[in-house]
Image (cartoon, rainbow over all chains, first blue to last red; front, side, top):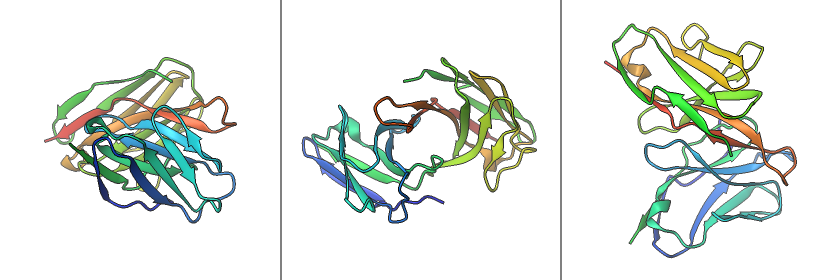
Length: 106
Length: 119
């Protein structure tokens, strides 16, 4: 079973920041938080992952709470091409939950 | 990153037949994973395929229905046997690769998927 909870859908205006939350209250000390996204008809694409520190790369930022029970993926300037299903995964095996369908609108 | 290819990219098959899906990776990897994504659904892990050993299947998936081969470190096949319309899905393979700078954590890369339709 997936160890994460995400809202089923979110909307975001183009150019604005998209903040996608994820709850993982049962996470254990050595489990990483991963984020993937799946654009329609493509395989999942890795975005970012982290353990307890906040992380940033060219695609996004990952903010993990101090107790590690939740995290937020931030797309700083969403574009129409960021419309996808975003999956938050606590890595044991890569078990996908239902994800958040992000719709970016003009 | 890794380059992962799958064959076929799509197929339409008759009920009761079998289809073998190939996954090729451009680097040697110990573990490969097979997923299924039914229409409108999230991904479901079918099995983990380690080179040199039997595949490990997740709950609800059995070797007779989804036999897996792993003849070397860059290749794997998944067969969907005795197909029914309920097997219509996208089947994806994936491999974990080490992420430098983040300890032992692996980044998992996915193939483009095989879209299977069973009539």
